[in-house]
Length: 512
Image (cartoon, rainbow, N blue to C red; front, top):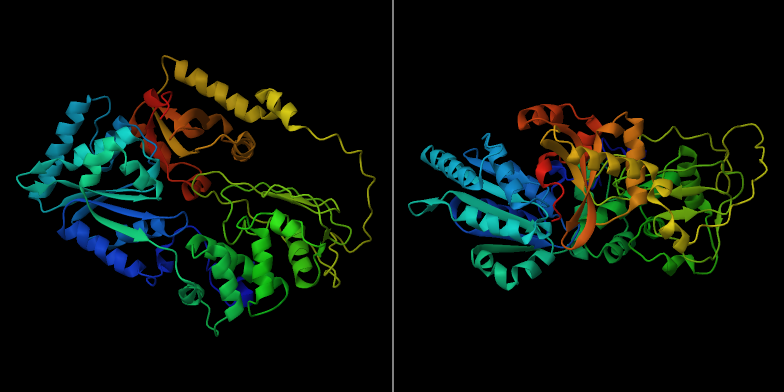
């Protein structure tokens, strides 16, 4: 939306990892070099830990690009797999068809394959993203795989990327054997405020910007304070700040633009600013909100890809938009008194691109306070009486079929599939969640229905680290070859948004 305004060739602050935007400052480059050395010349399990949004996945993608050609890298993006699923996944990446084989046969075949690779001067490394979410039994299986060796040489290496919760898991007494085999540990720290401006301008120039530094010193300090140095948060705030400046037709990012971005994000508790003295959306910020409302999308869901899944509701804005002091609203919803309601939500899964934004509707010159949908005078329709709100208690007791019919339908379809004696044994896992949020899943299924793929979606309740969640599957197939062929024909939207993997349906009913 703002690319031409700032002379950019692509969005500079996407949160999806793109290796061209890798920032080697703040010790990231040194850690990457150390990882390449540890894998090519060393032994032992390697662990990389860091807070959410600190850049672990980007580092993992860079590592995949930097490894020598004689090293076969197996990247596991979905750690919520059982012990058997782990073995099948590694065998699949090594082009071994071991479907239906016993565990001892799989392990022996893997060892034979790894020994053959070693004789050819090749090595194998398994990179586990989000390793903190991996079940303990699966982590223990990784340790057993690491024990495979020929003579004095290990046949496989393990690299674990995880949040600080991974360290807590490894402190458990039954994990001490795995912990003792970790010989390299790297901790990714948040970037300091002194480095943030270098980071911001590096991303801008990588996206084609040719001008002088665009962020004022005060704006950089504000971004650093609000983001706490976490790169994903920095990206989100910078992206929204650019959008705020674009709406004002400004070419320099000032504190007020960052403040607008902060207010639109969930990094600051909503009551910290909604309960302040009445806050009128005037000047550029009003145009900011009016433009986005006319386009029918929520700030942050287009350029920054802040929302994994985005649901948008729009109605005509016929009066000035004013946010007055009010009771705090949920972080995923902002409601203007004029009737404009915009909702956004996210699923704890890889990013799914939101629908393309509709073309911006015409805005009158006085759009600082108003936005209209047509040049003709706006006719205000008589509002229907607002139904009484559904209380939380009533919502809890309402049947799932009434509240979330598509989710209810797919859960029943999944039960029928798993009970069918002639069903296929393999499915394609799109993503999983570690919490139960039916309203978000309902929106995802609504989009699947619009794609004509609702009948292909199956939802399996799971337990992940003691939390209830969902595993979302696509289709069911007789064998892994058929499933792999189907994976190539997935809707492009799913290929871009998720990291699809094969999934054994026999294990789907077992909670993790």
